[in-house]
Image (cartoon, rainbow, N blue to C red; front, side, top):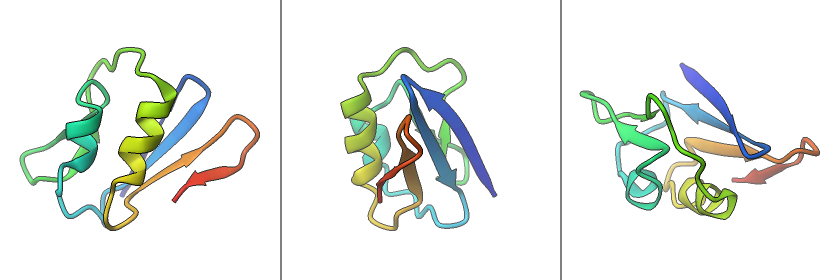
Length: 79
């Protein structure tokens, strides 16, 4: 399964099948990400306007590349 959201021009995709629940993304951007009851990352219900650089860094911290980021020009910047 996967889920996508757009934040400040960045499209973030979560590949829930790859997630191992490390929580690195949650530690970096708790307004955007949380771990569900199965320790799989998901988007928060009402994420606030997080700094795009923080979102990119949080996604880049994923050890299994379960998070990807595409910029406004359609270029994948993470992983």
